[in-house]
Length: 123
Image (cartoon, rainbow, N blue to C red; front, side, top):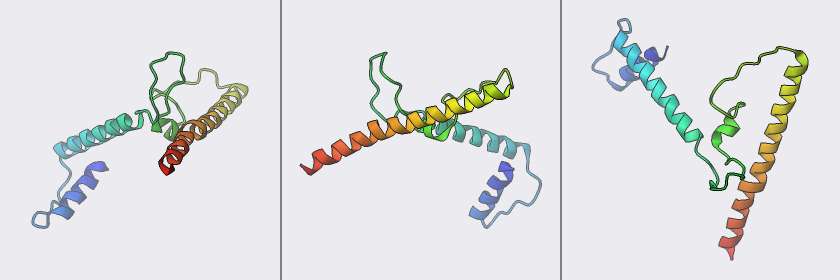
């Protein structure tokens, strides 16, 4: 699918040559590599910390954009071993509580810092 999109974009850019034949293996390969590079770049950008990173081991982990985009904090996928309804409900409640804590922390830390910087600049 992506190879066809790239072909369409290439055809739109160049009016002198318009390919109408089937997609070649090299076009599929190029499309796959391009998508992988794009996903890797997005992962790197979204895993950068938004706030100051402390050297202290006991400090909280810094906020990253990925925490707001993904439901899972890490990039790996974990399996649910027991499909029991109570366990799933417990997990859902835990995820919701974690999201709420993250929102609170964002408001307190990041927005608080922005507010302080704005007040300093006004003085």
